[in-house]
Length: 305
Image 1 (cartoon, rainbow, N blue to C red):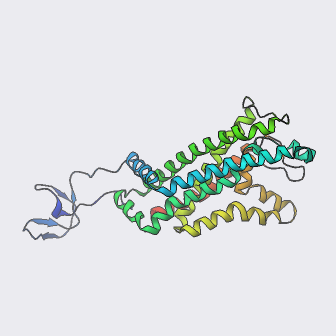
Image 2: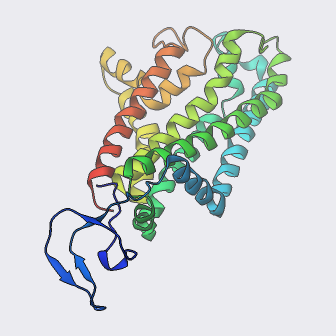
Image 3: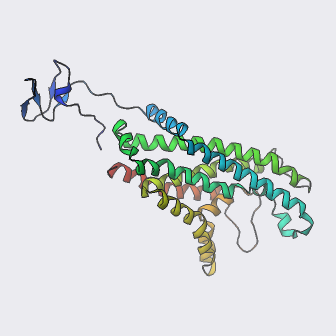
């Protein structure tokens, strides 16, 4: 799609110069106009900053965005607190393996539920504009589709990243004391613990971008959310039942399991099916996000709104 905004010849100021070739016509006022001609002075292109300002205004003005963020915060922190309290109360009944596997991922366990909410937010950022017809309005104001796509992705990523930081440290403040009672070392002075805690906002942000990509690809709210749920929760269950080592290997690289690996500080969850390393989990989730974002960007530039 061209980035140049055409201005009808009849609307140009007196004395404007025309370039190009085309049939000459006469407008209603008797002035000359040439079909398809462009003004000599180039039209100012919309900047990336202006596109971002527009996306920020959209997110701030839509009430459902604030409710979605609040729900994600409450669900993630609340479940982390609840799991910590119940685990601490039943600590003596846990198996030695369960006690040994308790780490920072247990402190932020609620994020496994809240991550779906951020993914839904990413899908809604796009799909609602298609369903209401606002996408055509946005493209009229910002004809540079690549700029608009990038602005939506950056604004969404920043919002979710900030939310993820709040969720991570709030969960840590409320849940960590329960585990410390049982001599679990969760000090943020340890690099592994701090890395696992900071993996929370990264995980939430990448899943939100996956939701954004599905919104661009499918352009339908229900379809985008259903696909996200299948990718995060249904496919891991299916791959878990695949026979042999192939099923275990495929299961490890599912987005939810890759995200889980980012937040662990133990070498493996169990001896039979060790998870990915934190770095491998991050790279795997990054690949999943790119696999969805790149075709979404290509199709957005080529398809009609």
